[in-house]
Image (cartoon, rainbow, N blue to C red):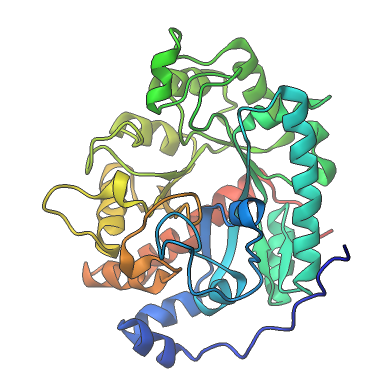
Length: 366
């Protein structure tokens, strides 16, 4: 079967005033998105194509269950809602054997290359900050390719150094299951006596540091979190790309204040997820405001230099209905409603993410 043809060029961008009117937000909210790069630290929009052939380059009305679980983003909505760049994840199936996980990762990487090629310049890989800036100068959405579940690399002959062309910029050490590298924060950790990082996990952190691949501490058990911190090169910033905070909603998935401080101490950043399950507190908002509650706690605890967006769109989450299909401007509006400065909002939207990315991968355009 021949590959689908490249997609047509993007339609003219919806004017800021029209998008603001459609979303019911102020013109200022959209103007901030136009003035500053918006970076999402974690989207899983490559999962639906693997599950049922969803084409991320075509406009969709949503997933099969509305805004629940999948169908949150596609390239037309990415462009319409001003998403300049995102860490797109290739997520690992943990139930395959180690060799099969590595082969599948390489096959998925080839499929992702085809997707970017078929976008006809509307998407571009950005393995370095310089490449990101070059992509944005051409008007492309920048793909900061990532791995969700680093056990994809277990059988890689040279670990992270085996990744072709250094395309992967970030790896989540563990996902929703325990792995050879350590324990998850999910209830699956109950199946494992040792909740920490294994020797293989410590070696992986060191290998990721050597390759300057960002170490992502989302999903990891608190004991393994501490172990990773102990072996991590503290000259490189750490990330937790998609999480909530326990200071607003206590939950096994969320980070406590000590963990926030540990990431901030490395100059890193924490992306707030858009999942109702992990963010909503009793009596609190179930809309874009709950995202901003968690951002506010990060700001109050470690400062505005360490808060970011990490939606987890298309990662089997259920976001609030008002931000169920990429409506980032509604999050911006909730920040404005709190009286936050343009400087703070710009940092959270993308400034902090790009600072961390540049510290890891300054690079030069390919």
